[in-house]
Picture 1 (cartoon, rainbow, N blue to C red):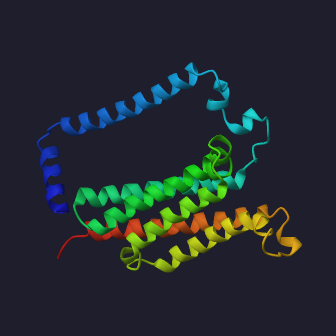
Picture 2: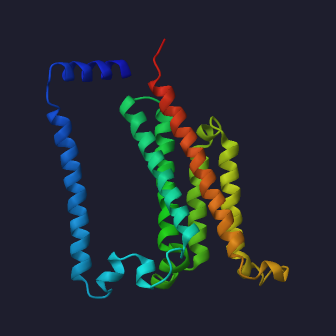
Picture 3: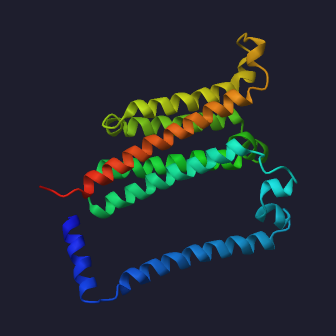
Length: 236
């Protein structure tokens, strides 16, 4: 399949044929993105509930804080974003090559799950947005996330077992540890816990999360790279 694609491209380039369909497709996609961004800016300028500068400026600049505020949180966001991009891009490549349909679905779903976790981490959805603006308990949000993750694991369990799933399990353990530490104050109402576990455990909670995000990234980078390599290597 890849040889046929390469031959068609080489043939077109060799004849000096312009790739008008490809250019038109890319241009139309860019224009759609431009349109969405423009619409978002128009809405931001039109609404009066939130000052525009609070929507466009960097949070550190708004609070007049130091550049290092949220350093490790920002690093985690970047790694989440890289993981989601790898999943979506690898799944797209496999789809274009028309191979590995199971991994196509797995990578796309993984990209969606990673994006959900990314947005939650970036906008404090379970901690602030949903509880304060929708009145839904943080525990219910955690429950919803847990159900979505469980469905994901059940749906793709066979695919996951074909990968280096130990790394995946380690990522989940770190992320689960972070969630558990976050819930400790609430658990202390029913379970007697040592006082040392009920203080400000930011280093433990956020450290475990950062380790989990980093492991998550390495897992999907390995899966995406391996599947694309297998799909593009010459058939003997």
